Amino acid sequence: MGQSKSVLILGGSGQAGAGAAALLRRWHPALPLTIAGRDLDRARRVADELGSATAVTIDLRRGDLGLPADHGYSAVVAALWDDHLHGLRYAQDRGLPYLSLSSGLVDIAPEVVAGAQRASAAPILVASHFCAGVVVLATLHSAREFDRIDTIRIGALLDESDIGGPAGIADLQRWSAVVSAGLVRRDGVFTWVSAPDAQADVPSVDGAVLAGQSIATLDVPSLALATGAPNVRFDFAVGESAGRRRGEPASIEIRIDLEGVDRAGAPFSTSRYLVHPAGQRPLTALGIALGVERLLGLRGEAVSPGIHTPEALLDPAYAVERMGEIGATFVGAPGDS
Image (cartoon, rainbow, N blue to C red):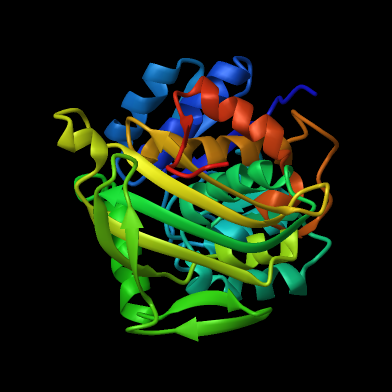
């Protein structure tokens, strides 16, 4: 399917937006891209590096985003916090697919309501999961080995030097100010947990253990409802990564523990790490790019209007293949069967 109109990436000069644009350019060289930001010079630098891309300034306080009325786009990506939801409304008014990744579990209610009120307007991909849904897809790929999953436990370790740019830092500050409790699924019930129940040890791939805690992330309901697992937990720690301990750049390590029964009905468990030596940016960028590719119908059938999540649209096997292409690896944890 060809695209004559451009993908509008709000915050396209930031880490996640620029990384996603680079992947889309690699996968689909003829796909028009528009890098939108408040700093036109910075947006132009990203656009120039991509080639065949344009740069524009935006004003998220305006309903028209400060864009000329005659500019047409094929999709809108909010790679930043769209606090007025003007990007979403802009997309709905024009029937354009929309992807967001900065709302988080605590901020998606306005997006969901907006999508429900105008369910036939456009497809909305809520990708405010950890790394824009990549961890959910990696977990579901591992889950294919099971007949039934009883427990899912994710432990994500983010290097303290890899929090992200100003937008990423602002997101973390906003989420931490709103809620300090974590969301888990326990015995089939979604439950809020606070200290000490929220506290947890997060093991790094090299055996180091960091203090972390359960967090309120969309990964929990996505994994619980996709697999039927009655027990799901996502723990998160910030500290020195295994990469930096080796004197290398900051890495990201996400441990995925699954317990249940195999196809023969016997108890079965797996423990693996999803690792990227360059930190969280490549994985988040991949999640965005996969979502855009799917929303535009560049892979798979056209997406119907309504609210969607990454696991509802994307093939885990294909996502894992793309993870390998960008340098991510899966490493068995001690005791992995």
